[in-house]
Length: 297
Ligand SMILES: Nc1ncnc2c1ncn2[C@@H]1O[C@H](COP(=O)(O)OP(=O)(O)OP(=O)(O)O)[C@@H](O)[C@H]1O
Ligand SMILES: Cc1ncsc1CCO
Ligand SMILES: [Mg+2]
Image 1 (cartoon, rainbow, N blue to C red):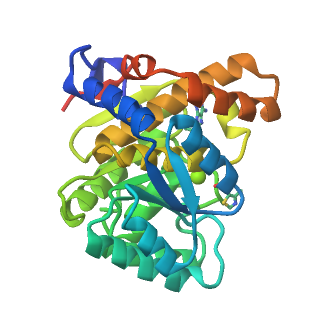
Image 2: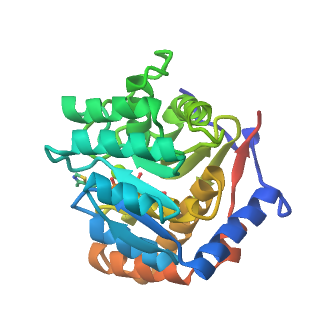
């Protein structure tokens, strides 16, 4: 598939309403300290919680269905990540996602390693009819999710799952990302939904509008869980903003924070520390005035 060129895009105008919404979402998170709970993998759980706190929210992690369902009633959004599977997850996630859907509660799905293994496939397939508000994933995972939800027209053939890392570039997931976003909007209840595909240039779409966000730093791929933390912070923003705005705000904050951390650090260990400091330090104006390339329709 050909790469989009700059002629196909324009930077969003300074007075575009989306920029004001992104700025407001950041200010609201820092003013209100919203709680987004997580059901997430145990490799990166600590980074997810710390990133949510650094971005201005609060965190609570749980795996027990009645606990997660009770917390959902008192928090703004939930983050669900299928990275490390345990035997009880299939039943627990089925019960939790059905209840969240019934309650109209907003949640973010991180379909880590989508396409890998029969149990993960069954878990993700069951989410098709009770979908999240926002899917945050790398390109390979979006291509796999689109296929296993039966949305694919067969034109995108991804590299397939190779574990938790992407084997596909972000643009190759464009059609899949748009189909998944449209599915979320059609089945999510409130008509809202968005997909955030992370990579060297992030791609965010609500199924109609497509935005590309250049930036970040390759050091983000040298710590585990930058993507998981991005999903967790997207859930933090989802407490105060629509899925499209939450996806853009979180992705832009991560890009700016990654750049700042790379300039201050000297390897993966200090990068992670500097990255949390940067999530804390970067202001709403820096994020909302970032380059946001919208594709011509
Ligand atoms: N090559 C790159 N250059 C700049 N930024 C990048 C690059 N690759 C990823 N990023 C950034 O890193 C963050 C995480 O994206 P990534 O695609 O690595 O997620 P992921 O594969 O789900 O990660 P994980 O599963 O380890 O949590 C995003 O903010 C993204 O913009
Ligand atoms: C390394 C790893 N294994 C399962 S989840 C995870 C974190 C990155 O997604
Ligand atoms: Mg990931």
